[in-house]
Length: 277
Figure 1 (cartoon, rainbow, N blue to C red):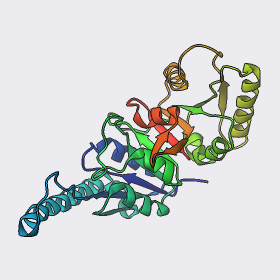
Figure 2 (figure 1 turned 180 degrees about the horizontal axis):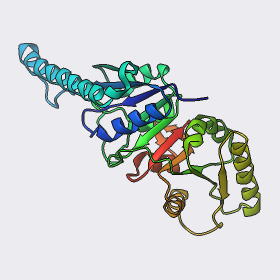
Figure 3 (figure 1 turned 90 degrees about the vertical axis):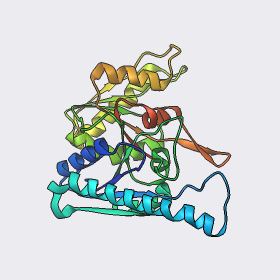
Figure 4 (figure 1 turned 120 degrees about the vertical axis):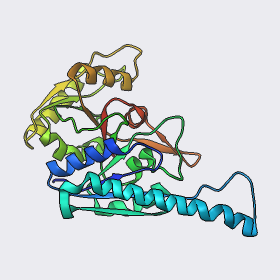
């Protein structure tokens, strides 16, 4: 398996330079095509108007959005000029998440910006948490201040579940490009640490048979730190530029609630997160 087509989700209300650079580097490393996708929708005002007055408000907003979309397409093509004919863009007036999810059928991996836990504008931003859980493709979440694909050290955060085992296959192309890979499982309070280490060691062997040299690591059981905080500590210890994990969530009152580690990887601002659901 490889990544033959990289899709990058761009946004009107976020800085796009970092994720463009990461997506372009990813496409170069895998000799892949790259597709830039962006959409925005008119956000209706909080007050109501009708007839000619309403149209007089809507038309300039539509024109402004179309111009900003065109500017973003131009930015994409300027950033990917070195890829020649292997770069294409797709944009429209639509809700961004809906449009990106409709286009992702042509891609092997999606590059997205991070997500503020406090604010997300559904009219101009494709939510990375929705992309992670609904795209059916691995998603590389790039924090705002990151502008390169650091694969010198990669942390693989795993759980012993069928979903996590399936997700590992999505990460293999990236892991084969990494210099150092560390596989980690955070034990639960009632876990036998030696049994957890056996599981993680099995994954390291599984990876080795697929061309990835990896080491196994299991922290001590106990303490009050969340799994996300423990992963961050380990990521800091090994200098991880990328954390990979299977993504988890559930539906609650028609809103997607992400599991703690997934939420952390979507919202944290320091490291790239590769997530697969």
